Amino acid sequence: MESILKSIKTKKIPINPAVVISNKPDAKGLAIARKMGIDVEIIESKNFKGSRTDYDKKIMKALSSYGVTPRNGLVCLAGFMRIISPGFVKKYKNKIINIHPALLPSFPGLNSQKQALDYGAKYTGCTVHFVDAGMDTGPVIIQSVVEIKEKDTEKSLSKKILKEEHKIYSEAVNLIARKKIRIVGRKTHIS
Image 1 (spheres, rainbow, N blue to C red):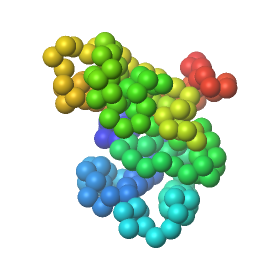
Image 2 (image 1 turned 60 degrees about the vertical axis):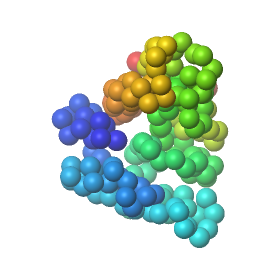
Image 3 (image 1 turned 90 degrees about the vertical axis):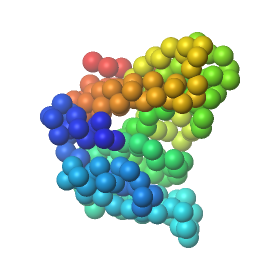
Image 4 (image 1 turned 30 degrees about the horizontal axis):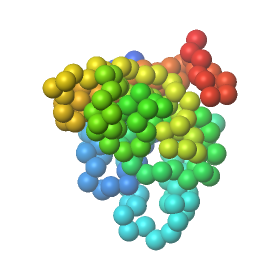
């Protein structure tokens, strides 16, 4: 999130950030967003009384109140560790993106770095993808490869991947903002 906001502030990405929404009141990103002059909303999920759909309706209402609509908005997930309801995904089709610390479709879900190490993979990396109804299954926008060294630990590998995530997430947002991405079936085409 911070990398994206910095790229926007330095005019590398031609969009206006509307709001940062968090489900955790102590999320580090909230302080970063406030410091950069971005509005923040906290919609706690921990003790939320209602369904996942009800929770997502609150998120969509907040997005709408800041002018982030399916027609003109982009929702960038960063550290938002919740599965989004099918209704949210359908309403914001191809307008929600996420980053994953692996080369999808390999090692989806949680603990991707550990999965790669346990599997004995020689390479892993990170993927920015559109969000669909599955878990880490949406069309891939961009990926970056990271070599796994024999001495790598989950911590050292996570650090290497995070460095690449900061680069490619901003790059993906820039491509979308400049209308350089077209989706055909499961594939994205970059012009």
